[in-house]
Length: 177
Image 1 (cartoon, helix red, strand yellow):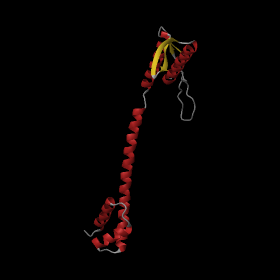
Image 2: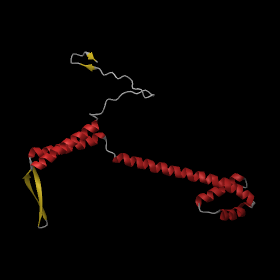
Image 3: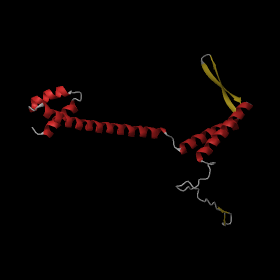
Image 4: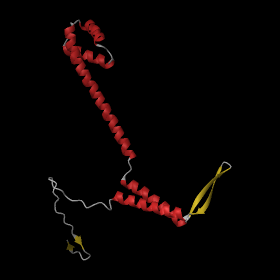
């Protein structure tokens, strides 16, 4: 009970249960329990506080790690995949093409506290805007799929471009450069 490790562990346990304990409060309890000098307490206090700080850092690191992993999972859920984005864009195009093929849209009016809708023909301006929107969506799909991306080239560590040979296969199976 009177060896240094036991005394230091006693201090650490008290600090874990009450981290706000001060040096003076701790010394009073220490001297009653162990009947040791202030110099001995100083040595034990130093070692115990170092151990307690390491304990607090470990707890803090675990909390940060746990928080980070939760945050990463939440962000993964929020990120839509390439296929999801492409499917959404294709759905928009189909809806707009259906609207164009039908040639009509709904006009909403509000009267006497009630919304009413009537079908009306698309105007030339609306048709042009829908066609422009479809074109923009198709361009976005091409960007996502990388249709117009430049040809990738292998590069040496020094930054010199290696020779890139493109070979084509014709209909008969012959390889040409």
